[in-house]
Image 1 (cartoon, helix red, strand yellow):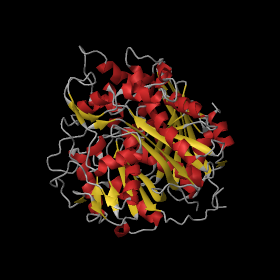
Image 2 (image 1 turned 90 degrees about the vertical axis):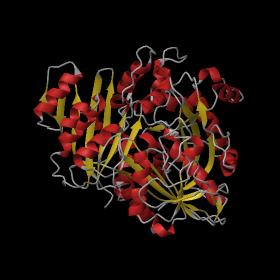
Image 3 (image 1 turned 90 degrees about the horizontal axis):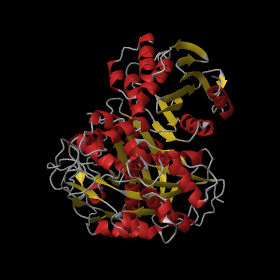
Image 4 (image 1 turned 60 degrees about the horizontal axis):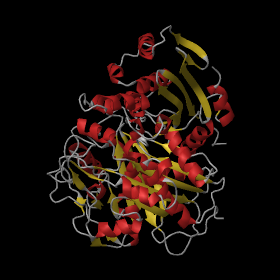
Length: 391
Length: 205
């Protein structure tokens, strides 16, 4: 079995344009969420994490001509460039490119967009990113609702284990658009205040925009200090409902069980859970039930939605990157917005930043279409391991 | 060799025709997709009321999957069949409908029943619910049918034991043009599970 690692990474968000900067802000309890009033994006007040288009443009103009790229493309390219540069990996035929997004350049459908309609096709987004960097391989675009970002890590691992690639670069992102906001608002799922995952006063989600990128690799060379190994992963459907989670948490329960089995670990051996925690009534309750069935109530858990909102196709990857730093810094970060438990089962929600020796963590996500993904990661010893595929 | 997998059956839906293993099963004169798929639903005696709530992409994917899975003697409680689907237009057909509902402030009326289908993987959820598939699912986007990608990904899931079988293929709906090609891979079957064979079957009709 080929070992796969999560290596160099980047978070491009309202909290900063480098993973280190973003994690520093999280450790200080600073959220990127802001209340938005009189926004052209939604007729009513909402709360979201946003990156100003002007700021993105001025960053992008340092590396290219921003007029040729949509805002999402600029964000993804800025984020991915830092990862490619840090990795020093030449982009040859054994290097893959994976793009995770739910809606891509959906804003191109708006009247008055500066871009032709064909830019809304996700394969065009893939081609744009592939061409910018000169990848030899065609981009693989994954669009699987809110699990896309974490499922992308599984997909990369699987392509490496099939020996198709030695390295896979993933970039993920979604925009805060009129399209997305109006849709979630029609579900009455939005909270006008900063969200409160797992809290008894939670009323709904906040949305956010982020680009997050990472290198998934079979090589133990040149790994950064926050690198982790992927021990096990699984995706399971609830087979229950397309827009609501299973009342029994069936798909999440099964995906965690299967990931543990592959990792050859017991639930009790996990040090930390980075959960989905959207702060909707049904999602958080479903997670509480699934983790209770898994006998994981005691494991420290957070949702990072209180820092970024729900960043859709980027969220799973974004939150995994924060988890990698949590392990590296041996610190459990608070689940921002939580104060009193509002689910029917016990959960060990992190309420203060806590120093603790951390070795292993579980990342989970659930999404529309009834999909759930669980992936287990482990800190790497400083001694690099010898890998058969290492060259 | 344990790693040898085979294609057991396959289905095409295009040009107003549903074919299984290359043989036409249902053909209809209707140029319009919604009439065609409704007639197909009746002909196939599908009897599943949720079908009428689905968007075009889900109807297309659902019927193509149903044609293959109903002859599989599936378990009533649960089945382990990974879904590995792909297309070009993602959920654009429904995306355009949602966009039209929010385009003008004067006629601003987004609907949750439409919005939920603005994700391509919703059709995987619909199929999973009908056939009790608590299994792996992933939806990929390419500008054309990509047999190599599907073959590798299915092989990875089957070899690692993450799935017993895999239902793979292409389901695309864009501006009233549609095409579906799904095939079932597992230990049984006559056709070798390799890229050339998948491409051959895709092009057979």
